[in-house]
Length: 111
Image (cartoon, rainbow, N blue to C red):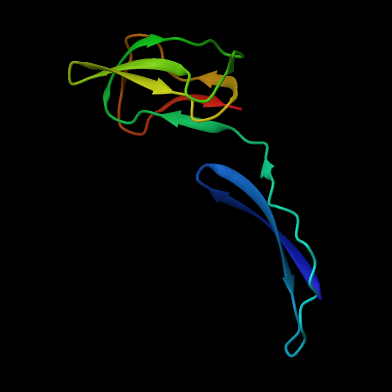
């Protein structure tokens, strides 16, 4: 029997998974598998719609909590709060105040 290790991305998080090959006619050994653990990675925060960046409320290197407002995006004359999807630290900021963004453009990354 041999085992292969794969990295799988699910909902923006990378998981390390080990797959064990079993010969035909044999029963795989029963072991308590450890829970898949996320591999340290960056999570990209993207623009949910086209608009203009009104304000960037965080700085690179700043610690943020899930749900914290990061950026104010104006779209269709409405101000939209872009919030942190998870706890972490701002790794990089890709936009400036006054900049136009399109749907899916990277705004910043959280490590």
